[in-house]
Image (cartoon, rainbow, N blue to C red; front, side):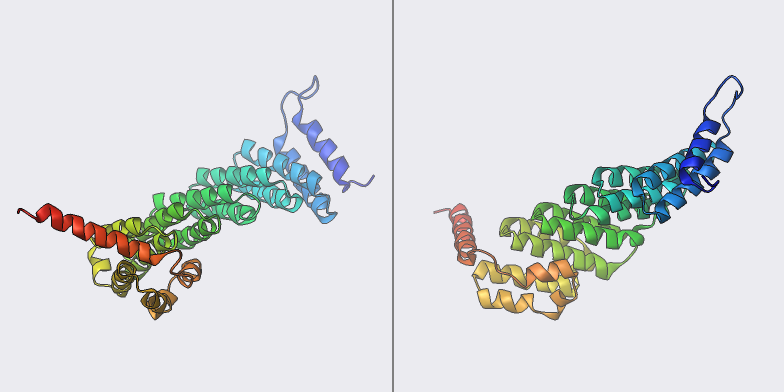
Length: 296
């Protein structure tokens, strides 16, 4: 076997890390180089399982010799190979570990990116885990005052929630996106997020929650004077009046066309369900209010 044989390199590296009567301390520096060489050779040979294990050992070595940045890089390589193998739980675990190592280096951007890579890999296989990873990636950036860099991650999470038909969760993330946008004075993104949340509730056929969401957002001056607010006001009014044609017209408006793709897609399907039921409910509420005010 040649000295570049990855199996031989692994055997040699393992020997360097094990203590014996003749070896009183492990030589992780030399062993790590051997694990790295073996990992790359296995990867080229498309022996992904062995390459992944070698990268994990190389990562462990870099940690021991106090190089968390290099350890994180190797852990990401191991995670990418787990993806090739379709080992989805390992993909999440290895990218999470890489993210933790980047945080040890004080590097929030690559730490967030590692979680985002895991989320993208898991969107189809484990969507619930994917949205959690996207959310965690956002938190890392926000804690470092980099809210603007989290916008696309929030949008990705919203898209997954809509695919899962978890509309309450999608709306909640849209409101979090609005808050993040507010913190970095991205008024347009903020207002688009609020209109998006209202549309999600309407798509879920929950007019009451849509109106509550609108009332909460209307407390914010930036939204109150926006095109998105005007569109939301007209939409809710059309629902109360049971005006299907007006709802469809507003869903095709330029204000809605400038929202994120996932929101445009569901807006184009409005109204969902029986709009006349909302009209009946609204009339009942008005009559009840009139009865309460009737002093005769």
